[in-house]
Image (cartoon, rainbow, N blue to C red; front, top):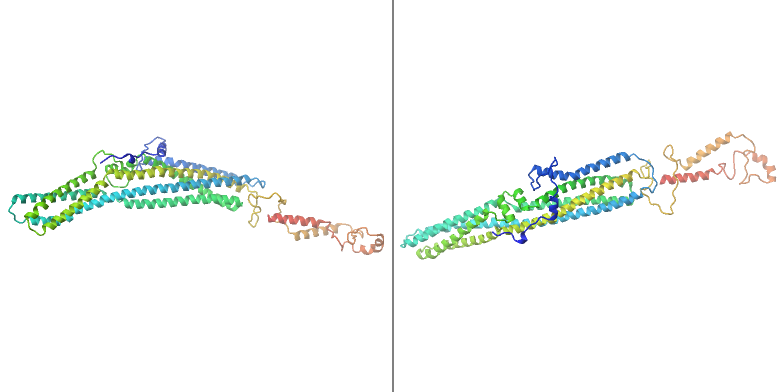
Length: 543
């Protein structure tokens, strides 16, 4: 058994050493052992404390947002139309930055998936190695056991025949006994090689691991894509100036904020645990993997450090010695038995034993290569490098993306709620918005003056306003003193008239005073002004 070559050397990555150096403390703020031990409550407690840091920040953030919303949600102070344009620009910038953070998270999730697939591929190669040991051990056991029983019985019957040369017969009988004993020893060694690995089913474990990784990758992609959809929707809502959409997306951003910090807590604990395991992955798997194998055996094949002889290696050597002895005994029988006995079944029996011995020898050659620790070590180092180097980097990248997205979503919720609270519009009774959020008027547009609020919340219509003015004029006419000249009117716009018409028509026109007028009605030009005011009110009601 040789030691690991230079290509099989494993060194913990720098990022793993950096994360492993983070203080592992318990609830009393005392340092605890940072060796990977998932079965230790103290170690799990230290990981929980590290993961609670993003959770504590989330609680603090939600508290600040709650206080802000409680203190500012009732503020109805009107702002100039352009007072929140800066909020619109800020919201757009934050949305773009948030999309970038989500993109980093997507890249990290996909990179972690690729690293895990490389580890699973190396694990499948290791599973094939284990299957080779199982299969070749079964072949060796069958060749030296069940398949050799019938030829050995036929050979023993042939040697029971009387023969004159007792010395030669004794040599053949001793060779037959050695063949039986060594075949049984080879069968026992093959069983000892196969039995420890019988409960180890790496193929099923790798399939489950692939399913778990596929589910993790799909869930990660779905989560990051949902966060990206919220960012893009916020950007579109700010560009379209939709108040209802901003209110809805503010709630969605608040949910994304909680999800990001919760994911950050889980990723922080997972990254530190992975870094601890990557300090000595062979020891971590030997002690904590569900393999049901002797710890010394697992550590021997994963580290390839020869501290003492491995159990499987000792059984392999026993099987090799037994098969060699079988071959020697079979050679003695094949040389002398056909010359001393004329049994027709002797040659087929010797041929079957020779074929079985050859098959056993080939199985031993395969077992020698499969049980060499360098082969298993090479596959293990490939898997460990993929998981601890690329996988840990991708996990840390997702942690960074979750933290950045959490801060950005916090800022988005603050800006969005601020814009929604201080928006300079009022909703009409019908529920429609009177002015778009963050309206961008052109340079040549003119703003209509806003009238004072009406008692019933609605401006009067044009026809109703005219009727009210007619009633007011009639009341004033009744209060004026009656005189024949008070209601004098002229045809058209003339009030003085000519001299001839003044004398002849004076009395006749006097009768018409106060009842009928020709030309301009007695509104003193008020209808034109009222018309403009009503149109202004209708325009304001539209906006």
